[in-house]
Length: 329
Image (cartoon, rainbow, N blue to C red; front, top):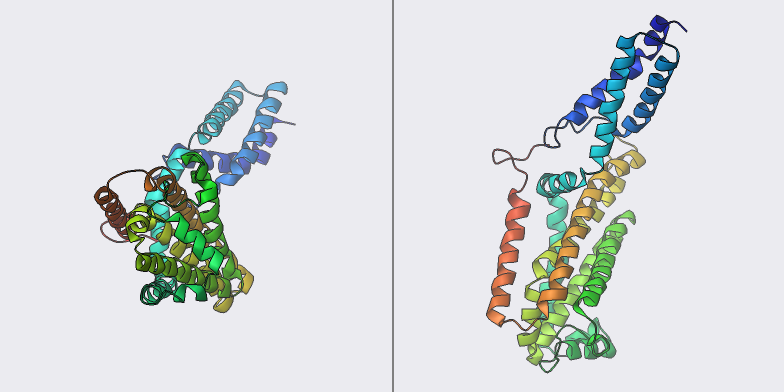
């Protein structure tokens, strides 16, 4: 095959490859979000093949050198992409996640109402009536909660079977438990939102009921310092998981002019960002719960630590990722 014919046949592929190289040469804050970078590895393999053909067929040194440079640039980008995960994660946490949550503020505030409303109501009911807790938990569950937060308990927040567990083991337990709650709340959105609403309301009732009951017993001096440190991250993350589930439900209830499947795909992409951010918050909450909450630190410092987290979470979700005081779509 003549060189001119070879160049004409591959011109479109080379042009697309050069365009992706230019996009990859930009750092992540400036990189265009709509560039189809997933095609780059396939194009890179084709360029390697073209370079090998050009050399074997004895094409002009100019073309061979040009293809060699394109291959070298592509190799550098593929190697660099393996180290870009940290920058991408930081970009997601500082910009993508909070912006996505603010774009769907209606889902978040509805989730907050469904979660914290029953929590407050059940907390007041359990504090005023010692029997109210038994409407949502059985006697065995109540007894276990009481033993976990008994002021005589050497390790608050751990039942007798887990007293000997290390902080690291408890961290793993908290991760599995909290992530399970969040995922069920999120996935429940596929049942037209009924699952998300159910898990939000149920968890709100349980958390509020336990808090009110333990406070009524006089165990608040153990319970509140324990939960104060990680509560901001954990409770907010569960509400965000509910918001992600409600986004899925919105696509099923109100797809607009799109097919339900198309609407679900679009909303699922947004919901995935929310649930990913919520999972990261829950892992951080588990670190605090495992290594800080049960530690013998003065109560006033635990309350100060917890109050700072509530402030930080509020400021982060409200302000992170804004440009000039407003969000960019």
